[in-house]
Length: 572
Image 1: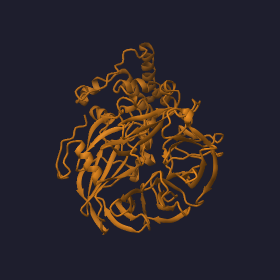
Image 2: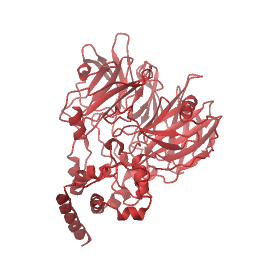
Image 3: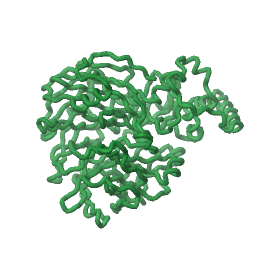
Image 4: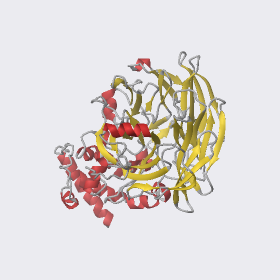
């Protein structure tokens, strides 16, 4: 009876929607003063579209999905409390003479909000987990990324914007139809809607939180690890396309970036679903920005990019956007076995798609997080990357994808693959890290996936790959009952030492640790006991003391300021 009433209400609202033609909706970007600070006032002021969305949410019964969803339980479960500059206990070994901050980003839905919706792991608000290491001590700070979406929903006191997890079935289809208008009631630029929860970047003294559906969200990083919002980066109103969560800084200090989009309007306007760019550090502006391929009737999952001395390298893989997921419950990105993986080799000074060299690998498959690439003396391009034949991004079960470390050798002159070698047929690896990208170096690192881990994004250990000897150098596994996240790489310029930092979780103790390893031999150097649980997340980086100092100076902060100095944070 209850659901019959709900469907009657839905019919009436849809009838009103048809009659109104969505003509009277406001597209004004909210300012701090225009967002209601009263939850009761916000409830009274709900628009027609918002009422319709809330009704659809009720019909979807998100509480049933969220209760058993893997990526909301165990150590995937979000944390609600934020902490500042908490001392971290060293339980074994000692910290080497390094000075800087490990910063790890990841999805962390705010459970204090009302109107909780169906969820996909990619949906959660960004949260940074910052580990400051200095003078042989460590301090921990965590905070929600104060993005525009987070700010608006915090002020409304409810989940307002659409989630990926909602787009299933008839109700999901209706949500997809109205989502544009729902978003535009609160946000003018659609490239600022997604949660910047994937990775981080420190570039030209600016700190960014990233998501491949957005333009970069800039924050001020305080000496104690907390964040203040700055705004969205457009590089002087140049960015008219999202930027991926994995831009790269080359040896010249230039920022190489790209992304893809499923937004039909942007694709029509730009003439393609992918765009690449290069920000020139010397000129202080975007030097090139263009669509690198002919317009296609599909959208490829192009999550990352790599580079060499002379080229940026993107790919058009076999995983394509597929709206059939609306009704069959699978992933919106699916492997098409009739489409081969191909690399797009782009000279760094290129300015048009005609200069892109597309090299077909001859096999279907996908790449998500490549390890490294470089040019040999004869001009051959070498790529080391985990490769997956049949990538599944559904993330509704404990099943994990299989990635094998693979070496490609490409000839940019002939546009052909010279060689493809699977380096190891037994080791399932993902989430790559190299101390220096774009050059031929000896060691690189990937996380080890296996069935003992509960799902994606958590790992049984990590591998050290020898790219000179073309082999697995060493596999390091965590102790029984313990799994970890992405290996974050740190190269100490003073000593040339390489360290690997990883958050791990011990299931029996229900305790998070931070482990620091020697990057050459895999020996454990230090084990830290975290004062609070750190959920599994996505990507992190090491920011040096010098980079922190430059960032603080850019924002008028003094490096010598006490890490306990307080500054009031507002989310608006």
